[in-house]
Amino acid sequence: MVFDGTASGNANRLKGYLNGVEQTLEYSGTIPAAAHSQSAIFRIGKDQANNLFSQGSIDEVSVFSSALTAREVDALYNNGKPTKIRTTPNLAHWFRMGEGKLDGKSDGDENLLFDQGPNGGLGSELVTNGDFSDNSVPDTYDGSSAVNLVGWTSGGATFTADAHFVITDGKCRLISDGTNTVINSGTTVAGRTYRYSIDLTDVTSGGLTLIGGGVVLEANATSPRTYTGFYTATSATSAISINRQSGVTDFTFDNVSVKEVQNVGTINGPRIQADGGTELVTNGTFDADSDWSHSGTTISGGTANFSVSSGGYIFMNQSESFVDGSTYQLTATVNGTASKEMRFMDSGANNGGLTTSNGVVAMTGSAQEVSITFTANANSSTA
Ligand SMILES: [Ca+2]
Ligand SMILES: [Ca+2]
Image (tube, rainbow, N blue to C red):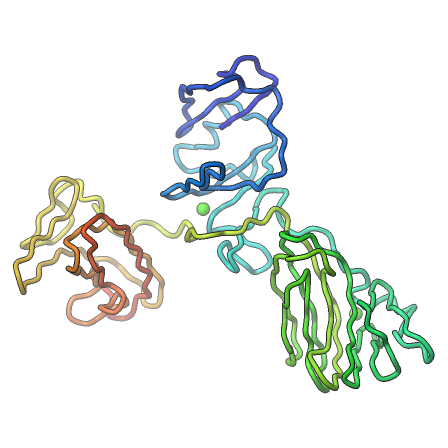
């Protein structure tokens, strides 16, 4: 859809294209000169006002900050292979639905959808002095009273000679006799998503509990390594809070970082699937009675038809080149008598990766979409 408020008349202000070709639209009322301004969540696949959901597949959703011309829309469509999205001027957001990546995570991990457009990615650092390079206040306890490290607050805890933080060698050390010992930095906005990271460099006793934006990120971390991940803040509390787990504690940490993930999406329900490889099945649409070896079954009307008498079984197959250890996805539309079963296999006598444990489909009496993921093995040959 293309909106251009500077144009005159509904047909010029709002245009719709399908497969690169402009469509004739029906309008209700007058398309305004200015786009409606609101702060509501941008939703893909749901009509929020009427609580309706799309049933189908959506891919490569992109938003542009300027009206595209018919020529630009056609170039984007590119005969069904939209390869120019990244370089299209004024791209604002790009949700790739499977190929999105950020910091080692992919679309679907932790139910997140990453914006691959220029306004996606990570925001600025929220933690001040997370690398503890500013040690002008080297110790949270100065011998008589509690103080705060530069960039950090105590969150209400009272530091003492036996429960405090100290910066040494560019790292921070938490020492506690068992009383509450905590420092905080940065603030969050409830509902937004953040990426955190901390190096736990040495643990002598006790463990680290990490809290950010009202969410427990790590509970009792005791192994020295980098802890990193994402969280969606549930409150406007500190971006990061470094706590002792319980009891006597002594550990050292460094390189604390929290950054907001820009325009990240939250997935609720749908399955995210990367674009994947090329189709291996020939004539999977059964447009003709060809490419399949079959006996007792028929191919007609654009479908494969199985009619089995009691106790018997029939099949059809074609040869594929599976790679041992590679992962494959089989999809099909299946319709059959309720309580009956059919089976997909990737070999005849010796079970391949698509076995009786994952290839069986229970019929429901109506059409159903089947999606099976399997890993080929040395026996995998025939579909
Ligand atoms: Ca995609
Ligand atoms: Ca450091």
